[in-house]
Figure: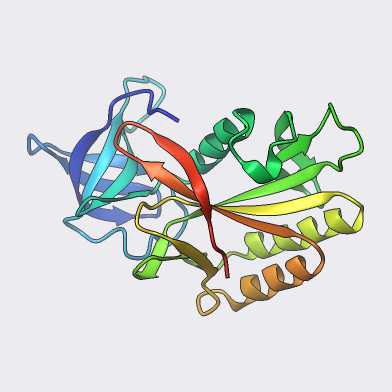
Length: 235
């Protein structure tokens, strides 16, 4: 996924109200940028951090910059959570995810469960004997130990509910998968941050026992583009 508009470097002054960030551009101008991340962004929002933002000239948008990346001494982390689905969709359509390569029909944002939407419903039109796959994508940005990426970075009741609904899909005869896209360039393995959200940890353990699959993918990140990379071990 290439950024449609070239990113520009900036320095973070502060993040506040979850979706706002005051930043300083290279020429010294201070502006407010949109932060498309509802999580805690633990370890990623310290004042003085180098970041990359995307300018826009859309008259409908009040804020003319969107915060996309954190750059910590060359380690890139994607902070815009919406990017994860775009990266995964591109990889699915290109057949680059080996575990899902047999599925040619990719349907985003399909209703399922109780008042929920699955990120992707996959169908294998050429092989109708294969069950549909319900894929829930999670953007992983937290790291508290070298090389170890963790999810979530804050309590997510919604995430726990998704695990229960994915388990219901397996019980109905479908495949179901939670796909952790690790959106930082320094991770080589993935786990659940059970100390941050014990309820989510319990929910994913129960879901896996019901047949829900877990897949973790790395990301290849630059200031120009982001693509899904090789699979990572999940424990």
